[in-house]
Amino acid sequence: MGRIYLDNNATTPVRPEVAEALAGMLKGCYGNPSTLYCIGQEAHVEMEHARDVMAGILGCNREEVIFTSGGTESDNIAVLGVARANRKKGNHIITTKIEHHAVLNPCKALEKEGFSVTYLPVDKYGMVDPADVERSITSGTVLISIMHANNEVGTIQPIAEIGKMARAHKITFHTDAVQSFGKLSVNVNELGVDLLSASSHKIYGPKGVGLLYVRKGTKILPIMFGGHQERSLRPGTENVPGVVGFGKAAELMAAEGPAEEARLLKLRERLWEGIKANVPHVKLNGHPTMRLAGTLNVIFEYVEGESIILSLDEHGICAASGSACTSDALEPSHVLAAMGVPPEKSHGALRMSFGRENTEQDVDKVLEALPKVVEKLRSFSPIYKDFLKQQQTA
Image: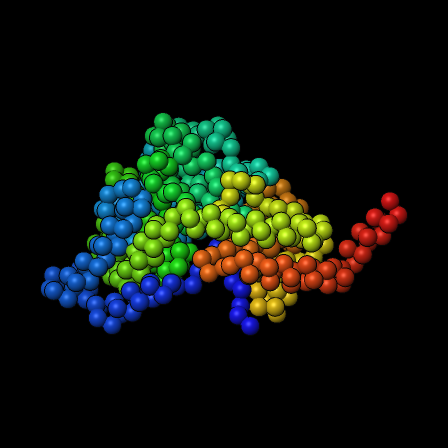
């Protein structure tokens, strides 16, 4: 039985074309790109082609693209680097309660250094109100960091509107676009951002490589020290095979564009409609329309999401309860908590995220297995039994 993979927000399988590009680099292009002789320059040329691809997607200059080890490092460089570089100007940062921990934890670290951080609320759909952003701005605000699309529920934030606001107040603006890069338009000028983070393994590229867009003139300090690679913001010999693979993956995603987004949306809605029709007591998490096409986060009341995951795995179906980076934590999702979802309900959340290998047949197989799994698990739940009794006596 072939496995059905519905956890593409966590990571994606490497595309064959990307694997081929990676293999070619590993076998025949081993030079250090910082060296001047021909073998090193061959590696340099390949890496710079990938940089050109990224610059084209982002709508920026190639010198503004910094390659990193992934989204977490990119977020850390952006948040820590900008805050520390602007310490004399102010010590206030604005972010949201639903950010990835790659942003939240650097913010918490900065609080220990004397910075003040405003963690903005979101509405029941996981959407931040731009008016809340503006109200939070002070004369000491040096950074706004708000994600483009949420990794758990898929809600897309009004980044362009916030970008205009940040520009008007002359505040540096960073967005974590790890989930949106390759799926939505990430033109940095249209979004109005000064920094943008992205990661390779979310778009069918290799793990361990990402990028940080840094607008020319942005005041930022490195958080690591060594050589002068990547404008001295990310010292160390570059992961050339990874960068080339990332570039190939981005090139392929850009070519597929809106057509793939429309296909994923159709799959997502097919699954959601099937769930609503066949499973009682379910609730959609995230914005109804302003949401990533491939993300479906659903609460199944009176059952644990982890139990559903393990049961689906026995049926050859891979899904998640939230962010892969915190899936081993027992605490309820901080994203759902910020959206006002009670802990007892958020524990029943299941995230299913689609990718390029998923088909309508996959959806139909999930709809065949999922209702039976939920029904079986609820039959063991004393809370659900009490609920049914209350319904009968009501």
